[in-house]
Image (cartoon, rainbow, N blue to C red; front, side, top):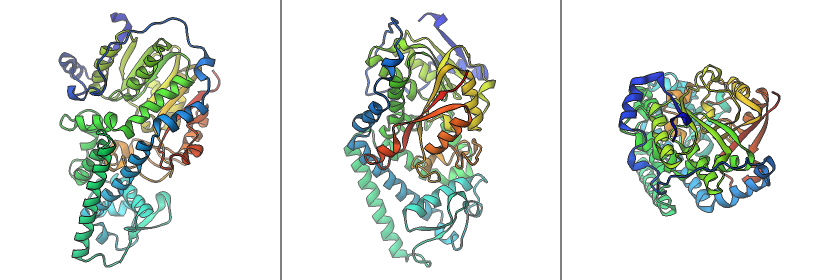
Length: 455
C-alpha cells in the first residue's frame, strides 16, 4: 500500500503505540478470524454506485433478509437459551450475595449495594439484577417500576430450608449444564455467550468491591489475561456477531458511496463485516476512504494489522477517539464524510444528543449515521450481556441520564428516535421491529439510521 493512503494518529500514548507497532501486536494470533482463510482483497474503483441501485428494495428487502438469513431458527433458539441461562446465573449471584436476608424489607438497588459494601455506582448493577429477577422469576418482588422501583424478597419470607436450597442449587446447576450442551449442539461458537456470563458471575464481587477498575481494563484492551475472552465475546459469539452482520447489510442496501467514519471500532467487528459484505458483490470501490477510531491503542493496532493484510488497497486512517469527550474536539477530518458508522458503540457517548449533533456537523449534506445497536425493548431491563458489562464503571456511569435516556448505555428504539430528532436527523429503525416480533419475539438488535436534515 502506498504510504500516502494510510495515516495513524495515536500520539495520545506514543510509547504504548511504539511498543505495539514493533511487536505488530493486537488481537491474539489464535483469535484471528479462525473460520475464514486469510486472503488479500484487491479493490477496483470503476464507476460510483447509484443511489437507486443502493437503495433498491429496502427496507422491506432488509426485513426479509433478517427473517431468512440473520434470525435463523438456530439464532432464535440460542437467544432463548441465553436468556434462561442469564436468569439462572442471576439467581446464583442472588444466593452468593445473601440477598434473601438483605431484602427483608423494601429496598432500592442503592440500599442493597450499600449494605454489601460495593462502590457507589454499583446501585445501577444491583437495580438491574433485582429488576430482571422481579420481572422474570418469583425470587424477587417489585413495587413501582422503572428506576424508582423498590424490591423485596419473594417466595416464602422465611426462605427455603437448607435441604431445599441444596436441591434448588443442584437443579439449577443441572439446567445450566443442559443449556451449555444445547448451545454447543447448535454450533461450536455459541457457548462464547455464556462463557462471558460465567466470567461475570465469577468476578462479580471483585469488580464491585475489591478491584473496581477490573472490567474497565478488560473492555479497553488494558488486560492481557482475559483479552481472548473479550475478543470471543465480541466476535466469535454468533449472537453478538450478528450486530456487525446486520450493520454491513444495512449499509450495503441504504448507503451509496463516499467516506466512512467508524467510531468505537474496537476489535474490528464492524469494519470486518462491512468489507467482507462489499467484497462479496465486488463493491469495495464504494468506500473512498475509511476512518477507523477507537479509545484503545491495542484494538486499533490489532484491527489495522488484520485489515491491511486482507484489504491492502483500502485507503484508511487509524485514529484515537474517546467518546467520553465531545466529538467536535477530535481531530477527525470533516471533508465529505457521508456515513458515520458504529457497532454497539454509539450508546456509550456521555451526552447522546450532543454527540449526535456533533455527528450532524461532521456529515456532508445528505449524509447519515448508522448504528448497529442492542436495543432495550423493555426500556428498564438489563440484557444478558450486561451481567458482566454492568461490572464496568464506564458502562454504568459514562452516560448522562435524562427523560429521553432513562437507563445507562443501551436505548429503546423509541428513545433513539427521540434523540435523533433532537439532533436534526430524520430517524429510521431497521428492521421493522413490531413486524419482526412475530418472527422473533426476543429480538434485541437494530440498525439505528439518522438521515441528516439541512446543511
